[in-house]
Image 1 (cartoon, rainbow, N blue to C red):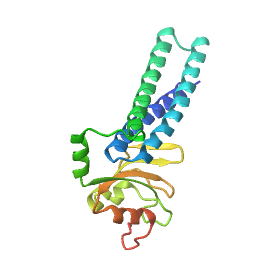
Image 2 (spheres, rainbow, N blue to C red; image 1 turned 120 degrees about the horizontal axis):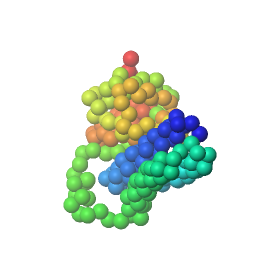
Image 3 (cartoon, rainbow, N blue to C red; image 1 turned 90 degrees about the horizontal axis):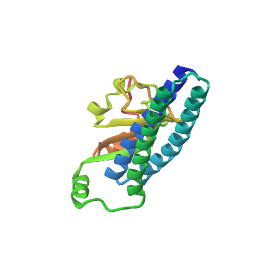
Image 4 (cartoon, helix red, strand yellow; image 1 turned 90 degrees about the vertical axis):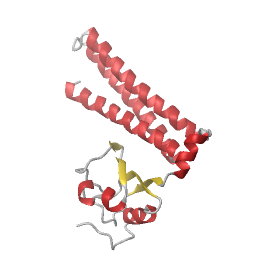
Length: 196
């Protein structure tokens, strides 16, 4: 294996862990089983990825490309990332088993004006092929994109240069008042609000 290949796979596993933690907490906060199920799917992918990385590390160690200390350090790093993924799954499990939240947490969630949306970007939407910076969703529409899923790839905490494409699944928060407006934009149903 090349050093670059391992680096890319480790980065992918770390990004998965980051996304899973955010989604797991979001599933609790917004009482959303769909989000919790996404965490479970990501956890299975992460297990397979961790297994693949560990096999590569051991193979390189046997071939003398890594010292014992390097091998141990890399294996421990993969194990720690896998532990983060497992922890996120356990958080999501609270939502899937429908365990009641502490009353104080439940009250604060219910009194919040913020809601969570998971929606596929329609090819009819004027948001397609635009960057988040161009769209100014937060300032114009009170919407924040937390993550984007494109195929099997996750983009956690996307920035202003992130391009949106038809078929992207957007994980975002907005206010209750803006919910329909944001959904209509994502679905391409509100042609009055276009972005140039």
